[in-house]
Structures are given as C-alpha cells and as structure tokens.
Image 1: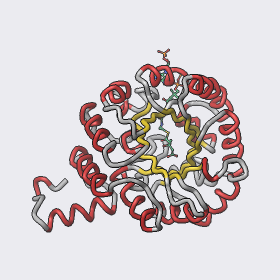
Image 2 (image 1 turned 180 degrees about the vertical axis):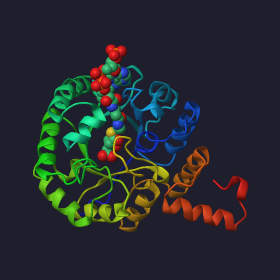
Image 3 (image 1 turned 30 degrees about the vertical axis):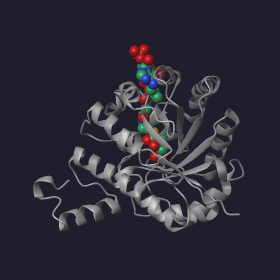
Image 4 (image 1 turned 90 degrees about the vertical axis):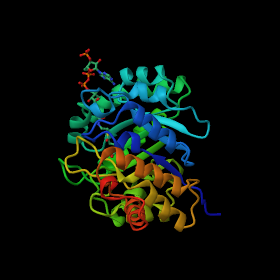
Length: 311
Ligand SMILES: CC(C)(COP(=O)([O-])OP(=O)([O-])OC[C@H]1O[C@@H](n2cnc3c(N)ncnc32)[C@H](O)[C@@H]1OP(=O)([O-])[O-])[C@@H](O)C(=O)NCCC(=O)NCCSC(=O)C[C@@](C)(O)CC(=O)[O-]
C-alpha cells in the first residue's frame, strides 16, 4: 500500500532567519517557535550552534533553545558544525542534531572553512558523541543540484558523501538545492543515483525556490517515493555563503501541494498561516509564500489590515 504519511521538517527558525539582516529579539524567536509547535509540525529546527561571527542572526542559539516550551509532540533540532557546537547544543538539551556539508568543495570551504575530507574528520566524533547521548542525527548535503561557485555538481560526489554519512550513523539525509537551480528531471536523476546509498525512507528533499521550481521538484520527488520534505514557513530562508540563494519552499505551499496529492502532513494550515503572518509583521516586509500573500490579500479585502499594518 502507498505510504501516505509525509514528514515535514520545518527549518524556518534556523534556515529562515540565518540570513536575515534585521535582528529578531530572542523572546520573539521563542514566541514564534512556540506558535509553530502548536500547528501539528513534528520537527522544528530551532537554530544553529555555529560560530556566532559567521551567523550573527543566530548568535542567541542557547537562549532560544532554553526559552522554547518543551513539547512532547515536537522534535527540536539544531545545526551543529563541530564538537564545540555539539557541547553547546547538549548543554541546553537539544532533541536532535543536524550535521552539514556540501557536495562541492568551494561551497564547503566558504561555508565551514574546511575541505570535504577535513569536514568528515570533524563530523565523525560529533556523530559518535551524539549517538552516545541518544540524540538522533540528521545530515544535510548542500549544493547537490548546483553550486554558486562551481556550477554543475557531479552526482557521484553526492553519492560518496551520502554513503559516508550513512556509514557514520546518520538517520536521515536531506539533499539541498541550495541555490534553487534543480528541475524535476534532475531530481529524478539524482534520486535514482543516490538511492543506491540511501533508501527512500531515509531521504529528504530541501528545496529552495529561487527560480520557481521548488514545488515542481517536490512533486517529482514525491512521485518517486520521497516522504520527507524541508520547508520554511512564509518562504523565508537562504544560505549566507551562497550568493543569490533565496527562500526555502514555503511550508504552507508545500503542505497544500502534498495534502492535495493525498498525503497526510498532520499540520493545520490555518494555524501555520497565522505564524507566517506573525513573522512577516516582525520582519516588516512581504515574504514570498503564495499562501501568505493570498491570505494578506483576503485580509485587505475584508478590512482586517490597513496601509499602516500592511505586513
Ligand atoms: C564551522 C565553523 C565554526 C568553522 O570556523 P573556523 O573559524 O574554521 O573554526 P575553528 O575550529 O578554527 O575555531 C576558531 C574559533 O571559533 C570557535 N568556534 C569553533 N566552532 C564554534 C562553534 N560551533 N561555536 C562557537 N564557537 C566556535 C573556536 O572555539 C575558536 O575560538 P578561539 O579559540 O579562537 O577563541 C564556521 O565556519 C561556522 O560556524 N560556519 C557556519 C556557517 C553556516 O552556518 N552556514 C549556513 C548553514 S548551512 C546551509 O545553510 C545549508 C543548508 C543546511 O541549509 C542546506 C541547503 O540549503 O543546502
């Protein structure tokens, strides 16, 4: 029987905010995450335990994790680049850790200051220690479908990295279209190639919508049997070390598509839209989600917002 249940990985508080120039107060981040946790989402990536100088927008990582209400229905994850990051994450009791590296050397160096081989040397003890602490581990592979510095990326490079991550003990691997260049035919080619190393149950797609192809790519991956997708509420997002990268696929658009295909996400779209509106108001600019813009247009028509409260 077809598996109708899909896993939505909400990355808005991490991927969504990491590139924002406007500082969002820690308490606002916490309040927003508490709202998101009431929408039926089962995984929320809260922040990153990276070097605060590299990602200033998330420099309050520990305070955010400590501030968020515990919720037995939600797994709270965070990015961890090295053992120093792991120490910080464990200290505040994160539920799950996510390690990350890129399929292209240049992006990996720009993003985490190491070659791919050096990164594995750093990640091995991180994964071993996280396992000893009974923390599930997610792995991200970025620039799978194209690199902002190198262009095309050889799928064999992604396969090799995916194999090493699985060998090291990662439970799910998220394959990133970091600069939003993928098209459905490429999704098919890449999924077929990497499924030799990673079973479909352990695969996730991390689409960015830079060229408007994210939902088409989700559809292609879903048809092939992928059942985990990363999204960012309101369509926030982008990697600061990938010039031109724009927002992740909006979680509300992702959910609409998947539910329309008959999948079960367990997420309340109306509640999610409220939290999309909330973060849009905090950031003070229109965010790219289709559902959010539709809801704003309706609110305008019904007189719920005027020009002074447009966001
Ligand atoms: C990896 C590093 C830390 C290497 O940065 P580095 O400078 O090479 O680090 P280092 O190991 O040489 O250490 C230098 C100093 O930093 C400190 N340090 C070292 N590590 C930490 C830490 N974790 N937390 C706090 N401090 C730390 C360390 O203690 C030391 O301090 P000192 O002894 O000089 O006083 C840095 O490059 C970094 O933080 N990079 C993160 C960049 C990032 O977060 N990028 C965006 C996320 S990835 C992404 O967006 C893609 C994804 C996942 O979304 C999927 C997709 O879209 O494809």
